Image (cartoon, rainbow, N blue to C red; front, side, top):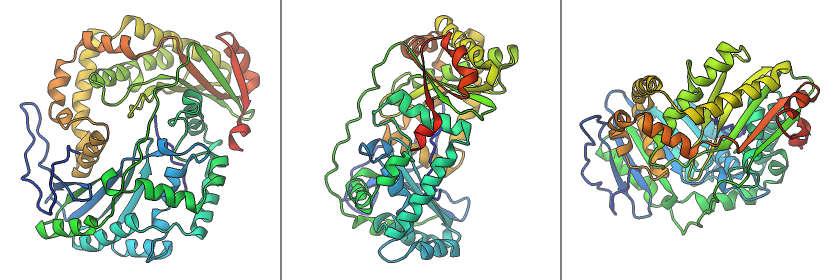
Length: 470
């Protein structure tokens, strides 16, 4: 599922090798019979920061990506949005410069800084032309290591964030996704978006941000990827820039298992002036590090991730109930959300939900066909190189794999493992992970048109959309 970072405040590993000094161990070229990725090397500084080096001499640029292994799932109860706010405020003031000066200095060298928050991590990045790489490094270090969260910027950011949350209700698809997280997870740490809620955003203080930053933005909780055109001297400059970053013990974050609930539950979020209905059907997903992750990716694609999928053919082509329908899953440290999203005419809500459930349950019962397996394997093979077609994309892949404890062999052995995947292994994953009956369905639509058709499928709870904006 897409992450909705409504914070107007944001501008928006590889396994570490033991090393205590500036000299990294010898780079190893990763290769297999099936696939080879570009050379990279890693080293661990004395303070615990893992640095990944990915050289690219093809263009005169340097980029850096810093992953902090803490995301919105670490938000305390009642302080939802804290991780997102903290990340978004990084460039709003440091011990040396204010937000305006930071913006002007970045613009002067054509550097782009960005930050994003996911449930399990925060990612900050910067890039520039290589002849400005020293200045870029200085600015990146300052923004990441010395933010001071000025009160005036905090209040400005809060107003923008609250305004963005209020406007979200007018973006029907985004609002239904925003509501689906708490409906699926309840009070679980995954039960809110990084933007938080209007109530929680109002409660965030400068002290909250400072404490969260101090507890989580530490080198032993971070991985830095450096990509582009650089030499040994610049590598030493990067190490000097971050080796003084002080570390401390990291408080463990215990993320519970997926909430236990059974049967079908439906929530109708009423808004009278909508001219079409948004539909989210959700169920328990999977962690990222499962051994049959490729099978799950293939199953979701056959079900509803592309033209020609089961849902597309049945709900759009055959029945004409929607223009677009797709399946989604968002694997995380623990089981994330998985499900189906679509929209339809107000008078077709009941039929669309009913036929979608029929198609979904038939998919679980019958599994994939040999023809579908051949098609999806060809699709996944063709899509694979595009996931890291640039060195920066490869860096992000390696950072994310590192976060989820997935070895880099996932990339090097991908084509080989894809070839080994078959109808039997995919159908085994479908039977193992997909929930035919334990479902939660959220509909954002006018109550007068949607409630009675939905009641024919089961019990429906109705809430007014403004309840979620308070």
